Image (tube, rainbow over the protein chains, first blue to last red):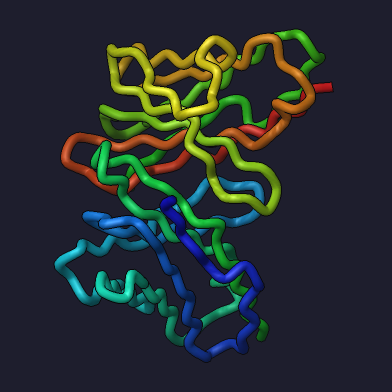
Length: 113
Length: 115
């Protein structure tokens, strides 16, 4: 069966450090992968999309890598700030229904001052 | 950026009653809208996908007669929870996407509590 795995344990880091979150998947061949941020009691906010033929994507302090051989994406936040504290969700496009996504459970990031 | 609103943001209803949740795309035409449910500390679970002017496609295990979805225009979709029961209490979130767009823009969510 298809699975998306994100580290369920919260990631605690100090302000200024780089946070790295992992998304692993099995039994998928996604055309693209997306990362979202979700704050408590709020809807997710789109951050980045990376396609299967792209290795890396950057946006300001954010960087995403996509390894279709390892079936893994890494999400990096450089120079992290307390305001970056949130849950980060990985989402994969389904093969049927191009815009339909399946979400991982998310990893909570806590950045302490 | 693309803005999606939801109304109400929270609602409490009695068991057996129906509740309607509205999802609007404010500054773009939403060709496709999605409805999700999220339980505490769980991921978003897709309930249904709707395209403007056509019937919604429901995920396996989601009762289409219980969760009525209407996508009557390019800016509005509604989810009606009929004959609500306490186990329907959850956080309901809609999202929308436009033509040629792969990312989804989410509403702020609706917290439903059925007593």
